[in-house]
Length: 348
Image (tube, rainbow, N blue to C red; front, side):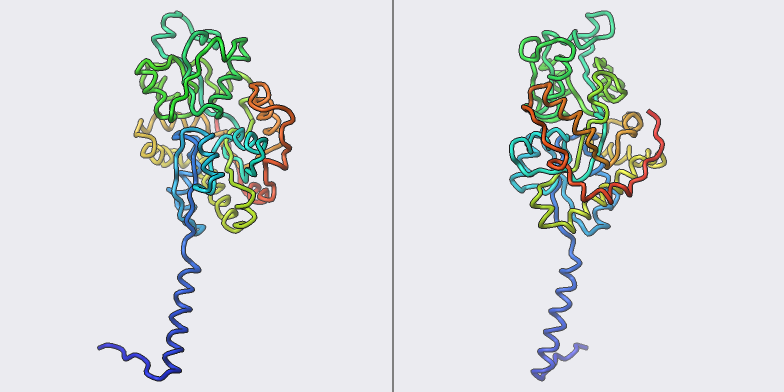
């Protein structure tokens, strides 16, 4: 039996008012749509991926889409252009953007130390008959990511630290995507590569077609790669100003993801999530990679991290002095949220 519609004008207006209130209530609880960019397809993006897959964004009323980029430079351009509202990218991208006058700011740290390595094709290292060194990269083609991005800057720093000239002694080859570097090597397009986790573990431990030159995750190589604020969650100052409540929600969700990542009890689940996202290299290899870098995840962005990142950029001639100030690149109004994070013991 159908319910009759109200017939009097007063009842009709009342019904319309109730309907409007109901619609407003639905809209008030609708999820906020966001795009978050990740500078490359590697475990660098794990905090954002976990926040999405484990429902931490959803719990905050956020409907997040993840967009991958071929390096920090295009990711930063997308942030400035507005196609994404946040990016997970190397902190040095933030510093360079501010140096250019762009209002980019980090609202949380994601990883403190660089997690990755310099690797060389095994057929190249076999000719040496010994463990390869950075000096052995002379004359080789080294795969990085976007020109001017973290991989490019870091490669230049590493070879210069070893006494080589990045412009004369090696050939830097940008490869569009961290997941494509190994393929480029196997195709003979590059001889070595600066890679992010888990691709170094896949290259060395799974395929057996590459050897380590520097295992930076394990603290090998220049000390600048430890505690430099490797990756941060970045947005624009205008976005924070105009969308503070949403920004708080994003940071809370990401910190919940960081808390989940550092808990050893979640290793199997994390490996399963990463395995689906990164081409199914295998649960065991991802567990190994996750264990190697568990100590790097933290939301705290420090002035010491800026000092190291500034040194990296100055020494590689990526920027000219002075380095932007801490207040220019880090929004410490989010620090109360950072302080909610409780690190758990993690073996290196």
